[in-house]
Length: 70
Image (cartoon, rainbow, N blue to C red; front, top):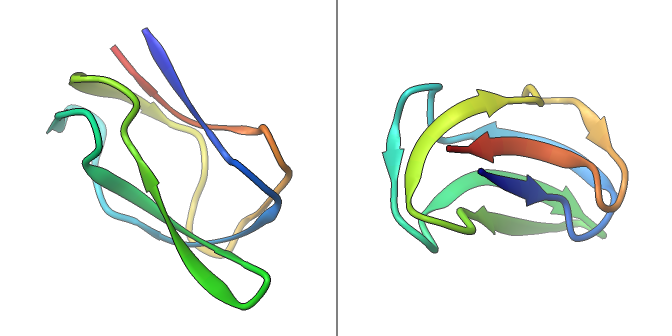
């Protein structure tokens, strides 16, 4: 299992995948707004999205788990 971690605090703009989606390493799965910039959050591994722990509009902290890939 791989945890997708926020590199810095910010606000979730978009969640681009659903639970059950197949992803490959470096697929863009979430868009985070930090310091007035949009930052793509990429899958860390190949696999299936097992859990998404955030929703659009949610504020997150640095190193918070955003999603889990199994």
